[in-house]
Image (cartoon, rainbow, N blue to C red):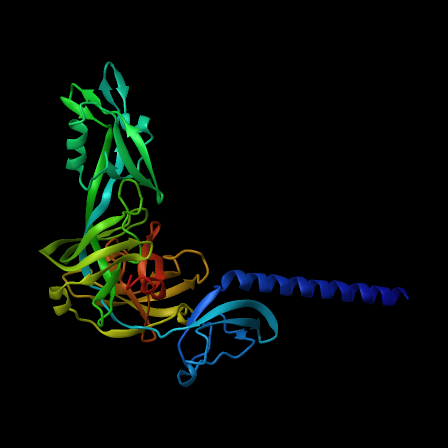
Length: 406
């Protein structure tokens, strides 16, 4: 009897361990696998990073029956076709064919309002005072209106404040997407012989990045793969308008441990090749001008959906000298499909000896360089690791394409 009880206890223990293990496995995959996917008509959902994960119910979307098939469907995934993992949403969508660029371009952005980049106290009436701080204004705020008049430049604000003669001024501003109103009382400064608000503001910014892809049919394009943020506040810059201009790369400062490198260059012409109208977490987006469309070049690639991206060899198109992009080998080392990050979906490592010699790896200005794998456009370079310039993050092309025509 004791022997039977012992066997029973061992069996119960093993069964409990198996159940706990299965629970851990399902919890792991539930966390790692995204909740939704796009699949082209005629294909099934295949997760390249998880070959053991299968659809419990075969999903086969044929073009001939597309009108009968619901565009979105819930699909159950299982491990080895046996152990249920999670339900995901699958939507039928055709992957676009895009021109992979890799050309460097100059970025000129005018802000939607003016951004407060610093607050400063000054001597007035024998004491240090900062009217903006006392009014509740903070670094990173976007000032939209003063006394119900829209403001778009530093000079406009200076003029209004100086003409106030110290009268209380109504300022409408935006902070973290929320708009509200504060009252500011300018103070007279004998040192500057005028009234001041105690704040430094910025109304525009410029820089260099890389065009990721162009939609030949519409002339719409995308670049960077991450937002343009203010250099002082780190805040995303809301734009009222912007321009993309041609640029020539004249030098590349190599990246070193603790010190990211950068591309250096100059704008070739003041005439824009494109108009920028959106700056968000996935990059900058715009539409080519007539002159920009005339100079469109590059090979067309079909976009890969996120589940098609694999670890292993790939290459980037990037311009690190002159104005023509070159092809460089990389390794996709890790894929984070469900990380919650829109711009850090892959970890990549530069393996190309020529590029490592020129730049040390990834440098500022290469953001947006398209990544090609297995004949498809899979993403774009976004960030460099400060402690290892040969490695960095990349974004899925799918994330950028979702904003292309907005």
